[in-house]
Length: 332
Image 1 (cartoon, rainbow, N blue to C red):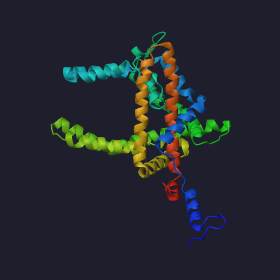
Image 2: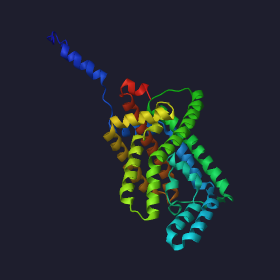
Image 3: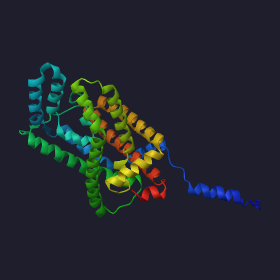
Image 4: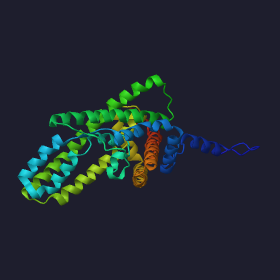
């Protein structure tokens, strides 16, 4: 039974309430996580160097075009299908003139790969390197993906240290980046294999049914989309788990699934808020990029906001990972 208050002392019930409050700390919500991430971006400006350097390269550096690979495919489709595949031919022609190195922007949030070159102020046109053989294009593509994973690790590991207030001696940073690099490559291989295993059979069935004239698209296409989006949502924190919890790809995927499963609506809220901020600001940066001062402002501002959003995701994930039951974080 609760004891009586004597000379201002707490009752037993009050003490129990106080202990329960200490055991269950309040986890910051979506808005608080985003605010904390943006604050950290301003507090540690040097962490935003990587996307700024990438944008400097995409502004002045060489373009590597894959026309040696897309050209033969384009000609074969033109010879066999003609006008029926004109949209595919046009898409391949555009791809053949694109820059393969922009793949790195899928890993690190550089600004210029997502903006039409005609909207960007430039001192001169970027020189293009047209690779001569399709197998060289394939090797360069593989090398670009591996390099992009390394750039991701060099960018995300310091961000994670700042986001979760982890202090790491400078001499340990190269090893941490190397481990994250290898783990991220393993994560990509696992996710590609998982998507191929789950979505490959219905995708093949959809193609076969379309070829023989059976209309299964109305049934299979929604299933493929829903299953694909569900997998994306539940695996969305896998990169964060690699750099925040410093675990391998299997455990990172396990952590992501468990965090999302227990915080589904907040995860969707964070994802939606991040997309709205990114897309809305992207429109502003594109309008600014046509002048020298505007381009400089857009590149720097994009790096800070993108870094802040990335750290917000790490803060959100880390806080909820710590709330998981012990058995959920000790077993895979």
